Image (cartoon, rainbow, N blue to C red; front, top):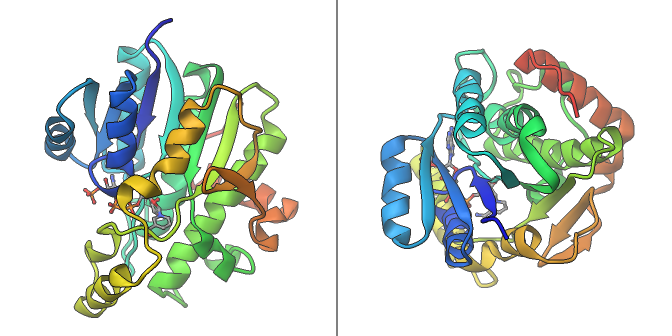
Length: 278
Ligand SMILES: NC(=O)c1ccc[n+]([C@@H]2O[C@H](COP(=O)([O-])OP(=O)(O)OC[C@H]3O[C@@H](n4cnc5c(N)ncnc54)[C@H](OP(=O)(O)O)[C@@H]3O)[C@@H](O)[C@H]2O)c1
């Protein structure tokens, strides 16, 4: 059996790092993405054993997403699993070079663009996993009139909107792409990572520290369980579902709107300048 290859974005900490560690232990070739090469190399050194390839891209920059996809296509002949995992939470509104609100750019547009750019490179029966969140339940729909939330920015709203976009994207992929790729949206649970400590206000960092201590939170390794399960389970999982604790579950009703999903797809193509071909 040829060695299986997985690309994991945001694998330098938290859920992504634990997913990379587990798959490397199971003998996979792990393309370990980090924001910078330094961070990716540090994660590779921390994991220590296995076939690990550090890759870098600042995912808020579409040119960097394109360069990452080109590197993967050039240097790695097969890709069995793509795990769109990198994510941010920003209390304060920031814009990318393309003028797009950063959370939306990293948490959704990078998933969309990277998945699209790697379509032709995915092996038969490949799996695309998108780490989403139950936070999407806070949204009744996308703010299509103001996706970058210029007039109504709040960290919670921005994050929840980006996570609703993850689920809408997976469901729309399943409707549009009649290939044999399996796509899954994942809710990892409440996980004790540092996501709420990066680049946020002191009040937000304090709130996140308090929240992390509350009971019911998973360790990062526990939070990675569904990603690891869906990457490795021998029986092909059903495509186009939302997963939690290694089982499919219903997502919020807003995520099943076909018109919202179709519009998001079109907006994502417009904002990335990329025509997604399945
Ligand atoms: N923790 C939770 O309770 C929870 C709950 C539901 C869903 N999630 C989702 O789980 C996923 C992983 O989050 P986590 O909790 O494990 O957080 P984390 O430890 O902060 O990991 C996030 C990863 O994404 C990378 N990243 C962030 N912004 C990036 C950018 N602009 N360019 C490139 N890489 C970037 C981070 O790199 P740096 O270290 O360089 O920032 C890090 O490797 C996210 O999609 C998150 O939304 C988490």
